[in-house]
Length: 214
Ligand code: AP5
Ligand code: MG
Image 1 (cartoon, rainbow, N blue to C red):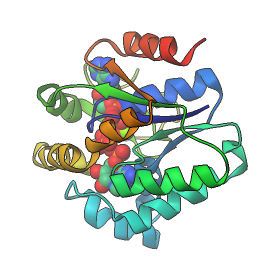
Image 2: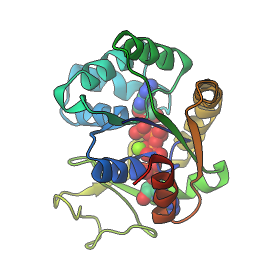
Image 3: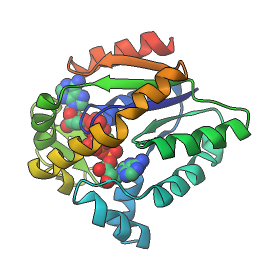
């Protein structure tokens, strides 16, 4: 099963993608997580990506596409995956489409987690992320057991550099300009499904399971 998560920054793509990955035993592939891991490890790719990410801009397609195609070519992706944060532009979607059709494959579902802009800023300022294992929390909605410490791996939780309100505003603008057109792209392919992302995260997940099947 090959799934794409669509939605504004902070819509809950990562939260839902992790739950999907657990239930359906497919890898969770997040380009944002891959970039953040590279930044943390000080790689060349990380340094390049950081320049864009800190301003809320998209990392150029040339860099992003290669990383994603390498990742989904790995063995653990043979039976499918859930893509979180990719594609984010029409050219990225076209490259993915072409790569898949060359293998005789296709995306099964593109799930749009729909959350209005008003809700997003609050979510982002309350989010805390573990840069070591990728887990995400929210100081009100999903607090860790011990403040500032990751439940999963015990490392310190941080406010992501790009979660500051002024950067979030940029990310939202770029989302509407460059990523939202993907909704039409996948509607035309007949695979788009929309879920209400403003409700409790378990309810969002139930709606997704109804789409994907038990
Ligand atoms: P990326 O890491 O993909 O960030 P994003 O799309 O901006 O999305 P987020 O991770 O911020 O939000 P999310 O939808 O995953 O929400 P989450 O589940 O955490 O990308 C970061 C940057 O990398 C980009 O800006 C770009 O520069 C670069 N990049 C990445 N991919 C790229 C690509 N393909 N091309 C070019 N550049 C790329 O939830 C948010 C918060 O809300 C959390 O605190 C969570 O606990 C809480 N929450 C979730 N669901 C609910 C709910 N139902 N109710 C209440 N709270 C909830
Ligand atoms: Mg995310």
